[in-house]
Length: 147
Length: 395
Image (cartoon, rainbow over all chains, first blue to last red; front, side):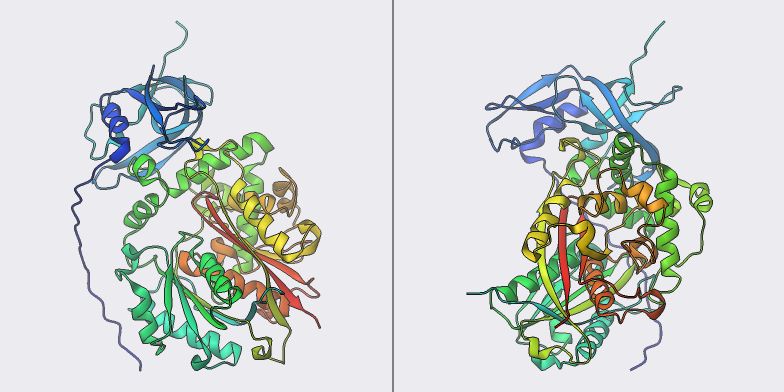
């Protein structure tokens, strides 16, 4: 059989009632600009972004507040469309080693007027702009140095 | 009791690209299954089981695809299973078929992969969906795309090894160039290193020509325990080893952000099963998951085909070229041939088998390849890895 080309455009919109389970406290804190890490009760490793199960396999974790500052380890900049939104633009994503954490977290970094470089100090900020998912609140700004 | 052997009887793939002819995976699956069975000189009645591989039903708009596709192949009431492992879905499908035969559940298994990824949705929607294939909650919804995460891993690799953007560009030149002689390829291009370096930045260090394409397409292999079913007019191919291993999903939880440690473990399993103890000298050809130019270098090293930090310089001097010491991605890989995630790992296995037999695309067929080849793919940034070692049976 040889078929003629025939196609239609389909628009499908889905609405999810989306919960956060064991990560609810973390995400709730993020929306307030606060850094809430998970800490293993066995090996004391501290995770931000949090792990609900430690790499030592222990599942008994505590929440632990971090000061919200850290060091930028690497970064890259490009265009993205934020899922579940119409927000698109050019964003800088970086891996940040938070003070008091044993891993790195991925967040968006606002460069400001300064050229971003690994090793720069950053802080988590409370996001004032519109967001549709709390992970979009993991935003960092540079901590001014000198002067 | 000796292990059940698993042979590759035949394979086929559709062209990879943007299918804007109104056809769908239902068409491609029928076509590719028929072509693979024809390549094996087998009949559908000889198939005992079918494994389907695809990454996401968001793309195909067909949930529970396995029974439908099986029905359209005329293979009811055979058992069917659908396998999903992101970019490693195809490789995982081969591994499931391998396991079914190895466990003596079935004698002859059809493994079919497909993806409707390039022309069905807008580019932004496809990138957004693939962004959810990492840690959706922590990173995907924050807007991180596959390219951003691969770029962060590559920056760590470059900082540690001294790899350069010129070395990355050499991968793009090679793979796009190989694709020039592959009529199934999505992106054949004759380009220079300067062209790659001058292409638009996407997420540094990656530029447009460092990135592979998401493609539409399908691939199929026929696996069997019956050596008597193999064609007598060409060398037999055995799947000598299969491995699968993982790394932490989030880069920030890894001890070495620039290395593919999970792939190293996956390869170790496959090599041990195949009796390979010096992959750098025993592996003659490799088809790897070059989602990005740097991922090819990271994969080459994780697979033990050269030491850490040496893949970049070796790529620049042509060691992995068609006429090099160890040709990598002769097909063009994902960068040149294209990348429909569900089909890619299966196409890799079919390609390595043809290369080892000596009956691949004539313009891309090296002379006198050794006995062993490797096919390797992954989901995430080297997160879930599937490795297969293929062996040509010379007796």
